[in-house]
Amino acid sequence: MCKIISVINEKGGVAKTTTVYTVSECLAKQGKRVLMIDFDPQSSLTVMAGFEEINQIPKTIAHLMSDSIDKREN
Image (cartoon, rainbow, N blue to C red; front, side, top):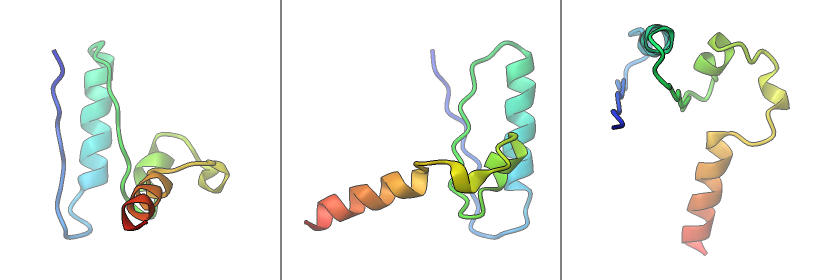
């Protein structure tokens, strides 16, 4: 069975990224499969996960969302 945990808050600087990373790390250490999705335009979670060259990632969630919006408008 799959469980979804969301960490959401409009305000910046409330430890959303740190919370997601820490909880994900703890769950992974317990043998759970974890998927983290980074919607932050600054890619903070992606960087925390070890992807330092974020400009070299060919397709991001921002690209996918933009493509989806463009298709709806057409």
